[in-house]
Length: 352
Image (cartoon, rainbow, N blue to C red; front, side, top):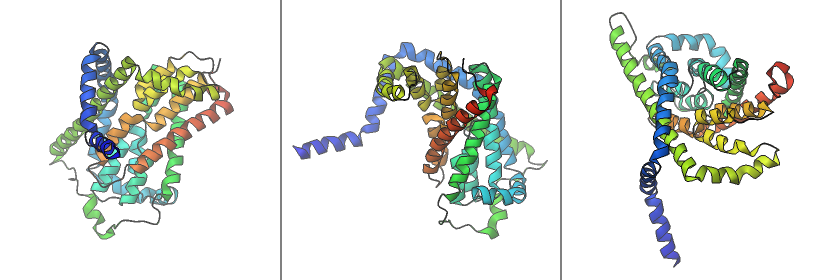
């Protein structure tokens, strides 16, 4: 009997993904009435918000990788990056562009660094932990102005987001500190210039290559947004999301937090934009709770972005573990700093 049960367990494990994908296909058909509007909403979000804000930055970072800006930043900022983050100065490019551009630019640059041997494996994994962030256009523009209808909230969330990012970077300076992969400094110049250096003679070719690579990345992001919009819609329509929300409501009650935050928070764990939008719509006298939860989701990024990053890192030998640990810490620190700022600075307190 035990052998028979073990056989069924092994059989289920072996066929887990086929069963899962068949179930997903069935749900797409069964819940199509609610699913189609969700897919349209996801496509609209991607076309109207993500493409205009991220695509130009993708092209810009691709173009910059064909210049000597990375090595120049390395020389300029090595004295700061090494003692603070235990990463050579070239890592400053990933740090700066990750802050300016937003998800998943930081991860993409860290993986490019690994492919071109600009940084060691351990340094690239440290970069993964803190350079993949939400950008100012999304935090201030989308979350602050469009979702919360308040620029100051967007500025608060952006400040605490950056502080949390730096904190995580400092913590992860100890990641595999005593383990360093082989790095040939003599071949550094050759490896950094593996990307074709841009000049007037090859500008068209380099630009075309940068646009092609950026289109591939932006389409990948669009696909994840649409799929996760569909998954969230299915979970809501089937009642699964509601069951999970009810099961964790006692935790919210214990901390004297309105249980209506449970479902939006779960949605945010899957996809941040939908989750933050739902959180902002909850009527609460203490708006600070809405803002603190939003800060956590912005730092964590959600499963959708995790899978986007995984699709990028899977083409390298980098571990995804530092990214997962780093984003959890980022969310915790961002919400903590937001709580501190709200309680210390009166102009950041929006409670009624």
